[in-house]
Length: 110
Length: 142
Image 1 (cartoon, rainbow over the protein chains, first blue to last red):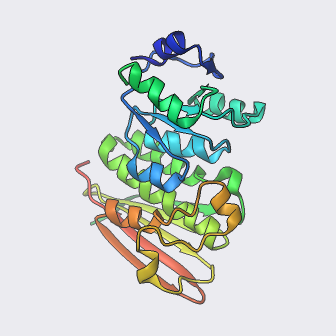
Image 2 (cartoon, rainbow over the protein chains, first blue to last red; image 1 turned 30 degrees about the horizontal axis):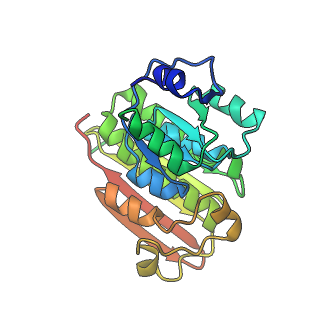
């Protein structure tokens, strides 16, 4: 499933509509400890986290994630969003707990 | 073996906002040269973890990258920090001495050095009261 299809099916908030959403999502990874994510995440995955500081963007870029999905309504600031646009990484807010976010992805076949 | 590319980088003290900048630069350079995604990802994991370690445990430091004519990439991370008291413990997954500030940002999982060790082909760490030097090598088919 592509990022665009995910947004269409879930109505989750896409914070970076300027960016290309045609990329396929190849699974997902949940985690808030950055070294776990660096060590275990795989290219093309959607990363579900509650961390909302600029270091997550570096991890996502270095790990070649498809997108970051911020869960739990963690406080996403305009500066945070701008950094994603600058670095061309997709940012999505699910507005759901991490578990519910992951369940939704699984129910969609991701 | 001859060095065909050399680059120096600086990690600034307490610059949490830019953490990962050097690793991103390294990855961009390797991509331009034409390294395979698999090798780039191994180097990205190691460089990111090492860069973060310099930031959260030392006071920044210097990073050098040398690329050799056979495709080997050598990274040296040198910091003037307090040194690692017990290297064996530091290499144990889950062991961490990170500050509360670092932990709140998702650092300090105790997986940094174990991750680096796992992805590197050669790993050497020298640490004392004057600082720590970590030397890593990665073989590639470029």
